Amino acid sequence: PPVPVDPGLVLGGVMIKPDFRKAYVFSRAGANGAWIKEGEDFMGWKVVSIGKGGAKLQQAGRSIELLLYPE
Image (cartoon, rainbow, N blue to C red; front, side, top):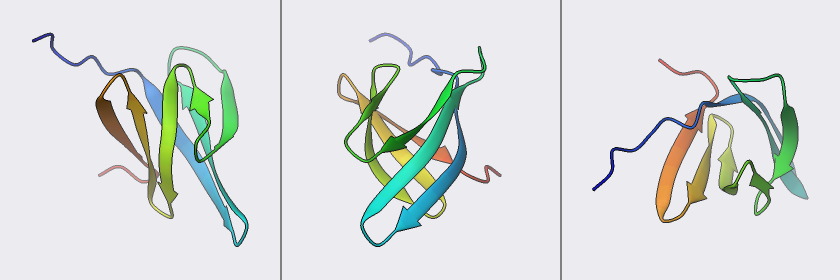
């Protein structure tokens, strides 16, 4: 199987309100970034869940977790 490649996405912030959750995601390769809600897509990755410490994204059966404060 092919080796997973780091898509170069970074989580810049999260916003959690009673009626929605958003994550600010951007690419290391460029300054493009956006506030994305759960269920929306960013650069081909679907935002599956957003929590206070990170966001989980999926693409083509593959999952990645972006941490707000990586260790």
